[in-house]
Length: 163
Image (cartoon, rainbow, N blue to C red; front, side, top):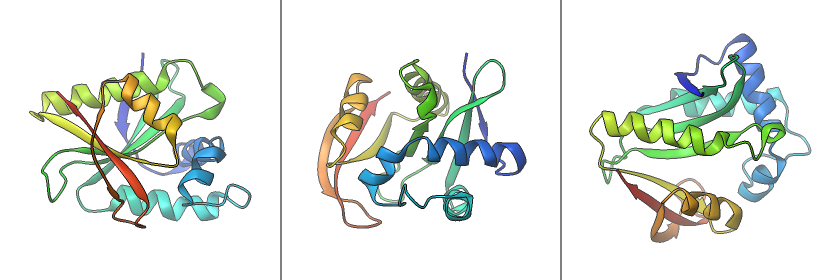
Protein backbone atom coordinates (compact mmCIF):
# COMPACT_ATOMS: atom_id res chain seq x y z
CA UNK A 1 0.00 0.00 0.00
CA UNK A 2 1.20 3.48 -0.90
CA UNK A 3 0.13 6.68 0.81
CA UNK A 4 0.70 10.19 -0.47
CA UNK A 5 1.28 13.16 1.80
CA UNK A 6 2.29 16.73 1.16
CA UNK A 7 6.04 17.14 1.47
CA UNK A 8 7.39 19.09 4.43
CA UNK A 9 10.99 19.09 3.15
CA UNK A 10 12.51 18.87 6.62
CA UNK A 11 14.65 16.35 8.46
CA UNK A 12 14.52 12.72 7.41
CA UNK A 13 11.98 13.43 4.71
CA UNK A 14 14.28 15.86 2.93
CA UNK A 15 17.14 13.36 3.28
CA UNK A 16 14.92 10.70 1.67
CA UNK A 17 13.98 12.92 -1.28
CA UNK A 18 17.63 13.78 -1.87
CA UNK A 19 18.48 10.06 -1.81
CA UNK A 20 15.69 9.34 -4.31
CA UNK A 21 17.07 12.04 -6.61
CA UNK A 22 20.59 10.63 -6.29
CA UNK A 23 19.28 7.14 -7.14
CA UNK A 24 18.14 8.30 -10.61
CA UNK A 25 21.26 9.56 -12.43
CA UNK A 26 19.89 8.56 -15.86
CA UNK A 27 16.92 10.88 -15.43
CA UNK A 28 19.18 13.82 -14.57
CA UNK A 29 21.49 13.08 -17.51
CA UNK A 30 18.45 13.04 -19.78
CA UNK A 31 16.85 16.20 -18.42
CA UNK A 32 20.04 18.20 -17.99
CA UNK A 33 18.55 19.76 -14.85
CA UNK A 34 21.33 18.40 -12.62
CA UNK A 35 24.77 16.94 -13.22
CA UNK A 36 24.59 13.44 -11.71
CA UNK A 37 28.33 13.51 -11.08
CA UNK A 38 28.15 16.57 -8.83
CA UNK A 39 24.62 16.37 -7.38
CA UNK A 40 24.43 16.77 -3.64
CA UNK A 41 22.02 17.90 -0.99
CA UNK A 42 23.38 21.42 -1.52
CA UNK A 43 22.35 21.39 -5.21
CA UNK A 44 19.13 19.42 -4.82
CA UNK A 45 17.55 21.08 -1.78
CA UNK A 46 17.05 24.50 -3.42
CA UNK A 47 15.51 22.85 -6.49
CA UNK A 48 13.15 20.74 -4.37
CA UNK A 49 12.11 23.77 -2.32
CA UNK A 50 11.58 26.00 -5.33
CA UNK A 51 9.31 23.45 -6.99
CA UNK A 52 7.38 22.66 -3.80
CA UNK A 53 6.85 26.31 -2.91
CA UNK A 54 5.89 27.59 -6.37
CA UNK A 55 2.42 29.08 -6.56
CA UNK A 56 -0.17 26.43 -7.44
CA UNK A 57 2.28 23.57 -7.01
CA UNK A 58 2.60 20.78 -4.50
CA UNK A 59 5.17 18.07 -3.88
CA UNK A 60 3.77 14.80 -2.56
CA UNK A 61 5.80 12.05 -0.96
CA UNK A 62 4.87 8.41 -1.55
CA UNK A 63 5.42 6.10 1.39
CA UNK A 64 5.15 2.35 1.61
CA UNK A 65 3.40 0.46 4.41
CA UNK A 66 6.40 0.90 6.71
CA UNK A 67 6.45 4.68 6.23
CA UNK A 68 9.58 4.64 4.07
CA UNK A 69 9.63 7.19 1.23
CA UNK A 70 9.74 5.29 -2.08
CA UNK A 71 9.14 8.19 -4.43
CA UNK A 72 7.73 11.65 -4.88
CA UNK A 73 5.84 13.71 -7.41
CA UNK A 74 5.73 17.40 -8.14
CA UNK A 75 2.24 18.49 -9.12
CA UNK A 76 0.87 21.57 -10.80
CA UNK A 77 -2.64 21.70 -9.37
CA UNK A 78 -4.13 23.73 -12.22
CA UNK A 79 -2.26 24.71 -15.35
CA UNK A 80 -2.72 28.44 -16.02
CA UNK A 81 -3.47 27.88 -19.72
CA UNK A 82 -5.48 24.65 -19.95
CA UNK A 83 -6.86 24.38 -16.40
CA UNK A 84 -5.83 20.73 -16.00
CA UNK A 85 -3.66 19.32 -13.24
CA UNK A 86 -0.19 18.29 -14.40
CA UNK A 87 2.37 15.86 -13.06
CA UNK A 88 5.57 17.87 -13.33
CA UNK A 89 7.94 15.19 -12.10
CA UNK A 90 7.65 11.65 -10.81
CA UNK A 91 10.71 10.01 -9.30
CA UNK A 92 10.77 6.57 -7.74
CA UNK A 93 13.69 5.39 -5.65
CA UNK A 94 16.00 3.73 -8.18
CA UNK A 95 16.99 1.16 -5.58
CA UNK A 96 13.34 0.04 -5.46
CA UNK A 97 12.79 -0.15 -9.22
CA UNK A 98 10.48 -2.58 -11.01
CA UNK A 99 8.29 -3.19 -7.95
CA UNK A 100 5.23 -1.31 -9.20
CA UNK A 101 5.75 1.80 -7.09
CA UNK A 102 5.58 4.17 -10.07
CA UNK A 103 2.28 2.74 -11.26
CA UNK A 104 0.86 2.78 -7.73
CA UNK A 105 1.91 6.40 -7.13
CA UNK A 106 0.37 7.51 -10.42
CA UNK A 107 -2.88 5.69 -9.60
CA UNK A 108 -3.05 7.47 -6.24
CA UNK A 109 -2.49 10.84 -7.94
CA UNK A 110 -5.17 10.07 -10.52
CA UNK A 111 -7.61 9.02 -7.78
CA UNK A 112 -6.97 12.25 -5.92
CA UNK A 113 -7.58 14.47 -8.94
CA UNK A 114 -10.60 12.42 -10.02
CA UNK A 115 -12.11 12.91 -6.54
CA UNK A 116 -11.46 16.66 -6.89
CA UNK A 117 -13.43 16.72 -10.15
CA UNK A 118 -10.61 16.78 -12.70
CA UNK A 119 -11.47 15.30 -16.10
CA UNK A 120 -7.87 14.75 -17.26
CA UNK A 121 -4.26 14.87 -16.12
CA UNK A 122 -1.40 16.05 -18.30
CA UNK A 123 2.37 15.81 -18.20
CA UNK A 124 5.39 16.40 -20.38
CA UNK A 125 7.97 13.80 -21.38
CA UNK A 126 11.24 14.93 -22.90
CA UNK A 127 11.73 13.48 -26.38
CA UNK A 128 15.17 12.24 -25.27
CA UNK A 129 13.51 10.01 -22.65
CA UNK A 130 11.76 7.19 -24.57
CA UNK A 131 11.72 4.93 -21.49
CA UNK A 132 9.55 7.46 -19.66
CA UNK A 133 7.24 7.73 -22.66
CA UNK A 134 6.76 3.94 -22.63
CA UNK A 135 5.98 4.01 -18.91
CA UNK A 136 3.30 6.68 -19.32
CA UNK A 137 1.80 5.02 -22.39
CA UNK A 138 1.49 1.75 -20.44
CA UNK A 139 -0.55 3.69 -17.87
CA UNK A 140 -2.95 5.00 -20.52
CA UNK A 141 -1.45 8.42 -21.25
CA UNK A 142 -1.56 9.50 -24.89
CA UNK A 143 0.44 12.12 -26.76
CA UNK A 144 -1.60 15.20 -27.57
CA UNK A 145 1.15 17.62 -28.60
CA UNK A 146 4.85 18.00 -29.28
CA UNK A 147 6.32 21.34 -28.23
CA UNK A 148 9.23 22.92 -26.37
CA UNK A 149 8.99 22.79 -22.60
CA UNK A 150 8.40 26.10 -20.88
CA UNK A 151 11.52 25.98 -18.71
CA UNK A 152 14.29 25.33 -21.21
CA UNK A 153 12.76 24.91 -24.65
CA UNK A 154 13.55 21.18 -24.80
CA UNK A 155 11.44 19.11 -27.25
CA UNK A 156 8.67 17.60 -25.13
CA UNK A 157 5.75 15.27 -25.74
CA UNK A 158 2.65 16.54 -23.95
CA UNK A 159 0.65 13.53 -22.76
CA UNK A 160 -2.83 13.30 -21.30
CA UNK A 161 -5.02 10.74 -19.62
CA UNK A 162 -8.74 11.28 -19.47
CA UNK A 163 -10.19 10.53 -16.06
